[in-house]
Length: 327
Ligand code: NAD
Ligand code: LMR
Image 1: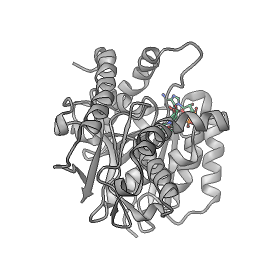
Image 2: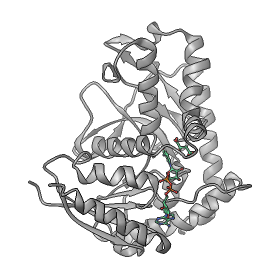
Image 3: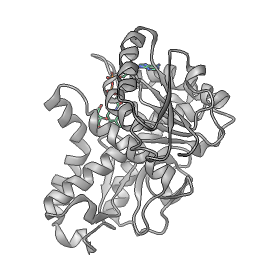
Image 4: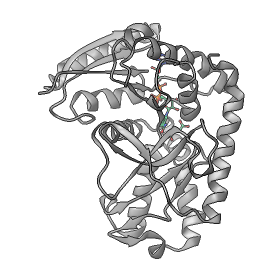
């Protein structure tokens, strides 16, 4: 067994938290040889419910669970953490505009960014799940002056996994037969799921499906999947979101497979003509705990138009929250 690492999860008593904590504690995220100390953050009224979750975590007697800290103090929650999964966010209420939502979340993610900057390990890996995830990640990053901006990422892995699943079903393959899918841009309905470089059992995906299915079914189904689940369940995706968060962190920490990549929302460095700084979904390969954008992919006019549309939305979101950035 390695020595334990500290993993913070915010919104720990919420529905994603309930699906996520047990996966992390069981070793699914960082491996069966990596003990974890969970740091669980909740708002004060949710602390009694969180205590119940802590009791259940202890009752699982996981070999890889080395301790649990449960708190409503962000400075305690992020003390010395190696990983931080920021799940807790303000849900959209009746009559709330996207702008109001961004503002309400600024009040959560600005102090959390500062607390990470003040207390977390210098190479902390931060994943923002709480919506609007990309721009919440940007707010946290812009309030964390002492951390490398690359420490902050947003989750588009659920969209990536949804794309794998839709394509597997269509082609009669298994998701593990599919390589090199990309989710470009925002975790929103403007995201662009791109299969131009994708292979299914080594064959080009674009040769196996027709363009009309791709443009008129696949893309909108992946873009709208979150809304379809809310309609069916009466609540947003939780177990699949938790599973994608586990996948995102595992890929980042333990590396991607040779000849494949994953999608992560990361600070744009201008690659593929995207405005520098916005947290944009890119194809990335990871090694030794670092991610790099996969470069040199050919982008046709169909893709370019969609990549630009989701980039525009992210630039607009950034403009709406710029006043929340630390000077
Ligand atoms: P939920 O309402 O069940 O749980 C959220 C929890 O966060 C609540 O327990 C709440 O008390 C807590 N919380 C609120 N503010 C907090 C703060 N300042 N500090 C700590 N905890 C706080 O919601 P959920 O279903 O678990 O979803 C969480 C978020 O994840 C939502 O924003 C949802 O839209 C988002 N989401 C993202 C994706 C994605 O792919 N990126 C997918 C699904 C859901
Ligand atoms: C999802 O993709 O399932 C969620 O982000 C949907 C939502 O709006 O909460």
